[in-house]
Image (cartoon, rainbow, N blue to C red; front, side, top):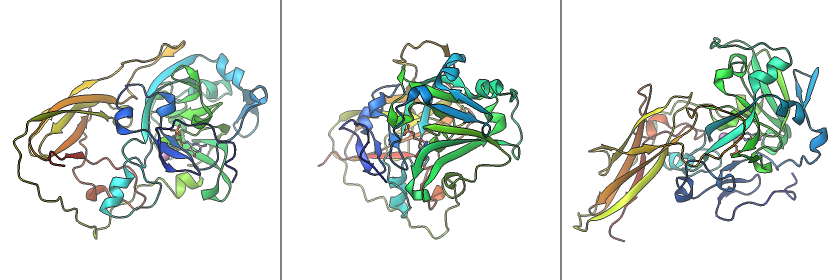
Length: 364
Ligand code: MTE
Ligand code: MO
């Protein structure tokens, strides 16, 4: 593969793999703003970044060939701005790998970002080519809409990256699925899918296909590598390793306060009901302050809700000796993050949603 045409990247990104380029921002940078700046937004690739310069002749083919839409055709449709958090299923994989080794690019806790995505609704695009709207959730087993990109993935032995979503989701205006050409009010950057990508809010990042080439309506789920051989959740083996939390050092009477900041999100457009913080490894808990909607860029077009976006939280914790701070969130359906990584361990190291623990050592 040819990596000679890669775009410039922010030097503060932590690089987890160079070719293909996979990088995430520093923890403190990520939670510094509700809207993640484009240059600090994580970058998750499976091959070289395609070079698509000839924008006038760029087209996306819909439905196997009968309709080819130019960027102008898509821009002429009503424009929506959806603030949505995109999270890689492999976020926090490194932590899961410490429990027992998993396969895949290692990620700390920052393989996600929150952006305002501008573009046309996929439901409008499909309606334009004669596929009617749906407003109900269709049962699984129906048709699917497959996004096929132009980038070639070495891991897949040279095929294009592709993924699919159910047709009922694609044609439902309320699902806010976009063909996006803007990110935070600017033209989409090459790293993030220029000139056009899918944004599928509320589901794992892998389905938000970048650099779109084709959109096909298919009878069943995409047979692409990333749908069938990757990004699947497996049950943990009963034979897991035990994490031993090392013995605490004696308490030191040295009162210090730290500010704890973080993010919380749930899939499927469910909101965050509460974020609980424990200053003592999970014995006692108090509620953190939550906030959203700060610094959302002004962008033309229709603004939709923030239900696809993360919430940030903040709390002050007293540090008395060495402590372990724990954060866990509860969503609007009362789903609570699982306590341990062992109970959700899977060989591909995805969907690590366990309580996030940060140890603070008062004694260096
Ligand atoms: N689309 C294409 N064409 N190629 C890719 O490698 N990676 C996917 C998805 N779309 C990918 C893709 C994965 S796994 C994730 S998590 C998101 O894009 C990452 O989007 P970002 O790089 O804009 O943060
Ligand atoms: Mo991903």
